Image (cartoon, rainbow, N blue to C red; front, top):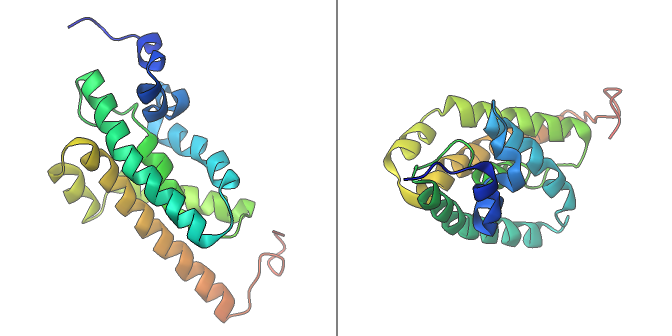
Length: 171
């Protein structure tokens, strides 16, 4: 099989999207760069929770096909450059989260921690599920875990009447 170049990868629309519009081609930490590329997507998402959830669900379904297609094109399951799963995982992390710098950054850190450390059941799903679903599912679970932590932080802040303004950070 001939060596696949970056130009070949980006020439296919499916590969281009699966590779996070090229963000997954970073020579080091492609998942981190892919997650960074997801931040503008989050900021462009509608603030209506039902609409947000429908879009994330559609992106997940599309991502299963997209990541499977790209993995088949590359001949490698879950190639590190495939970062569309990070996009969806980060968007899951940020469900119903304020659009402040601090929460965007905290969501980023939490998602990356869960995605990199892969605690149970994330690691198990990563090893046992194949194809496009396998590429997507570990990041979806990491996003759910990070979202739960963010929602607990928001709940605790609300319980104690703490706001970012009160902490001197502003929104």
